[in-house]
Image (cartoon, rainbow, N blue to C red; front, side, top):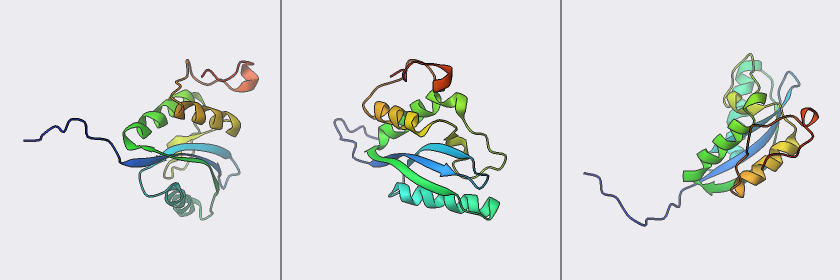
Amino acid sequence: MALLTVGKEVTKKARLYLMEITLPSKMVVVKIGKASGPSSVNRMMQIVESVYQKFRRTPMIYIKKDQEVLSDVVFKYETILHNFFKDYQYVTPHKFTGSTECFTIPLSDALQAYEAVLQGLVPEHTYVLPEASEDALPF
C-alpha cells in the first residue's frame, strides 16, 4: 500500500531551455524544451548527435535561455509555450530528436514568451507573427 506524504516539498529540478538551431538546410528554428538530465548542454549534444546521424552534418546550436525550475512545473511551462507557438511549428522532412519542438518564430518573441511564462503569465490566445499583427505578445 502506498502512503501519501503530506507537506513534502518538491525538490527535484529540471531545466527549461530555448535553443536557436541552424539546421544543415540553413533553416533557423527555435527549439523550446525541457531537460530532465543534468544540463541543457547534455540535451544540446543529444540533438547534435541525432542530426549528425541523419544528415552527416552538424547543426549550429546556441542555448539562448536555460533556467532551472521545479520538475513538477517544467512540463506545464513547456506545454504553454508549445501551445502558444503551435501554428508556427516546424515540420522537418527528416525527424531527429526534439524535431517536433521546433518553431519558425523570431527569437526575440520566443525569449519574451519564455520570460513571461516563468513569471507565471499565460497567453490569452495563440501567437501571431508580428507582421500579421501590430499588437504586442498577449501576456
